[in-house]
Amino acid sequence: MGELPRFAGEFFVGVQLRTSSLTRLNYAYDLRIFFDYLSRFMLNKPVKSINLADLKTISAFDLESYLDYLTSYEFMGEKYACTERGKERKLSSLRSFFKYYFKKDKLDSNIASKVDMPKIHEKPIIRLEPNEVARLLDQIEDENIAGLSNHQNQYLRSTRVRDLAIITLFLGTGIRVSELVGLNIEDIDFSSNSFRVTRKGGGQAILYFSDEIAAPLKAYLDFLQDETDNNTKLGRKIQNQSALFFSLQGGRISVRAVQDLVKKYARLISPLKKITPHKLRSTFGTELYRNTQDIYVVADVLGHKDINTTKRHYAAISEEIRRAAAKAVVLRDNDGN
Image 1 (tube, rainbow, N blue to C red):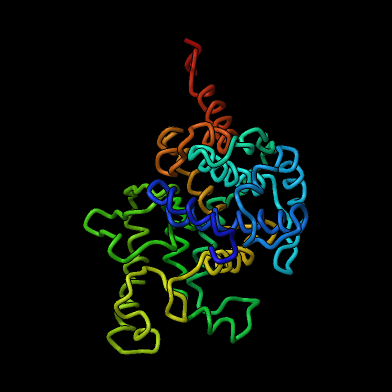
Image 2 (cartoon, rainbow, N blue to C red):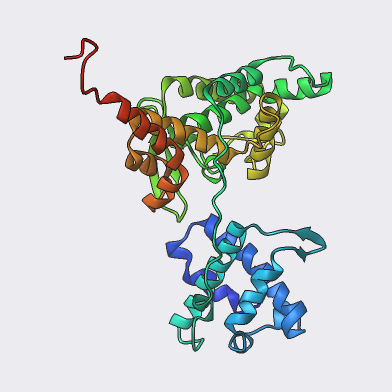
């Protein structure tokens, strides 16, 4: 908020009751980039000096030019490149921002609503095959991973219990990385093998897990308890904290740290696939669809608000199911009757 125009604070107060803290954080990040662009390339004035009157001078073409700029841009001395989905999110943030002030009669129009969303070219879904999932879990449990130095293996020994719990939770529930890092210990209920998760948009849902996922979770919680009981350096730092997953520094683990640990293990068993937490989520969704053959169940468990999102993601699996269904119908038995 400190790097946005002064009037922007009203927007964040106004949307607080209908958005999650993560959504507002994304809004803030996207708006910082937008106002930096206005400051440097359009208005020639400091970001803090930009006001609502300046926004009234912006046209739909100006916003289209901004989206083009995002293809390859610089922000705070670093260079970035926006994908189609990145541009879509940033335009969505602007639409919400302009819409708010338009509804409050502080802008004459929501100019952002006149800009078309970027066309998203769907990419093939990358996921792990069942044998790769087994190898990934075996790799995490291996105390001496081939190809890693003694120092790297020593580091992994100190995080293995946590990492196994994280990876199995991804593969066994399809949870989003943002949802995982937000989990607290009190969100877990082993009596029903369920946990409470805060979805995109701030809504909450109860997800369930199998005994296969419960085992590494319990082992990780036992590890945390031992660290606290033994008054170790980590134990002292995590004492009285509510987070479920911690970094070695004793703070709630970050999205980036989770992304890095998934990449670290996955490239050892599948170097040609760029496996991310989202790819593990896709792996779960694929197996769930193959076993239930119910796209609505998959959409509900994954937290997709639009069933079409789920259909697009699992179109290839639908084709597999349709082929299998065709073979399941037998017109004559083997005896020719």
